[in-house]
Image (cartoon, rainbow, N blue to C red; front, side, top):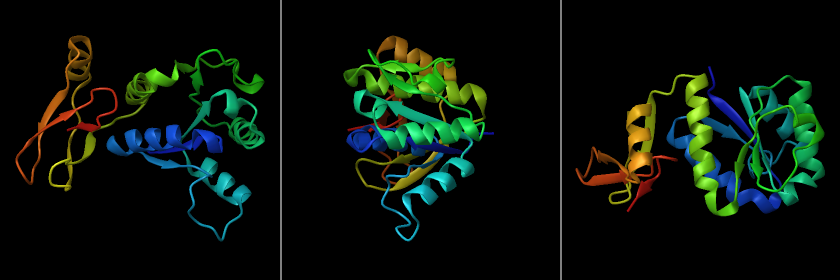
Length: 186
């Protein structure tokens, strides 16, 4: 079962990593990243080793900057060496690092990153059981937990170009969710 995910990325790709972490949070998956400013008492190397070892899945974000990042390449090497499940997110036009060339990446253009996150969540959902969805109401700010929409509902919304609908448990207002990332749309 996948419950924790390690996100490898370079410093320039921090916004992409944060967007991925938010999407994973919405489907109740915990994420680690060495660039997060937590546990300052531990060295960067210790944060990487801890995060990769504690994770069930390793997701490198490979962009032009990520491809040439020594840290990202070392994280990839460590994940391969510890036999992690690896699902690369690959910017279109970039070649996978040699240790990952046997894998099928999820490709994206910068403007289609949310689509890639949707495909990633769909793939994780096929590998493990995802039952719950965490939503922060954009109106009242309360956090709630609900059953996640079925894959069929998500597929229908994607094909129709519509949002998923839910209701806030607190303020009773309609909340429209992006069917790719489950993020609320005001």
